[in-house]
Length: 356
Image (tube, rainbow, N blue to C red; front, side, top):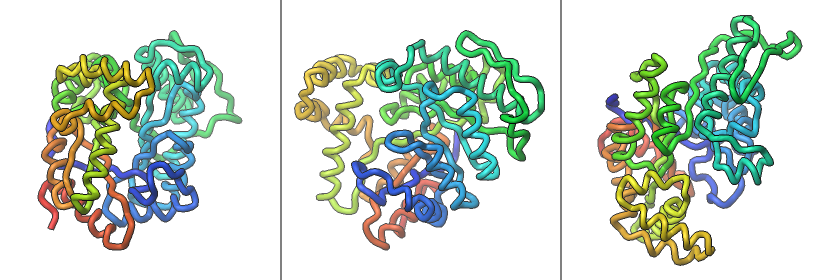
């Protein structure tokens, strides 16, 4: 599958605040309109410190063209019917501009943060997606709800709780993925996948995409319509001094991801399994300050795209333009001129040529 342009998906707040500061919900309306005016194709909203469905509703109400996506909402703590209702409502509000991005989360968070029993994520998320679609089909066509799987048995839908059909019932579902198993399952049951930021272009091309295409073939889905959306690891700034600060931050992020067992496959693919194990030891000992030093420049540049504002758009397009269909990108906005810079970078990503 080949694409000719890289379509940028922006976060709801494209650098208008420091990452450690909570999102200003009062500004979502204006920020979403700013994204639309800048030329973004869409915005992707993560589940971290805010409910992504609430933020998505604010953004959808503020805009008329911008695609809206959760990237990602955590699936398992919500029942399939609850998620189906949130997505159905957002699709109706946005008049067909919503994409449901779902993630599974790791066992420790499911058990200890959400207080739920764990089950292997791959079979569980397959059942989950199919259950969501069964609820949508019930609402759209009026057919009885009759879904049964190892994880869900659903056969009750009374008129009081049935919102009925909508104008745009075909809501795309994207699944977060790292390993080939989840990539295959995304291909089987979803409309796209969201590789983790540590998934390099080579890893996506040689491991994830073939697995997704095999999954699509298994269930008769059209691989040409399968989306691959990523939020790349980026270090960029207007000046060399500012860029060095961003590089330090990204080096620490790569070290953290490398220490995380859930992302091990993306590092083992590049022969960095031993490094990942060493960093896991440091992480368990909470020796955080030692971890970035283990990421040399070669490893850093393997997982992150680095460059100043004049070159970052071109570098991102060269790196990902042949392998993904959507990518998120933003820079900090401190003054009015930064908006013009960002608009130029977005044009670069779309056109594949250097910004002037």
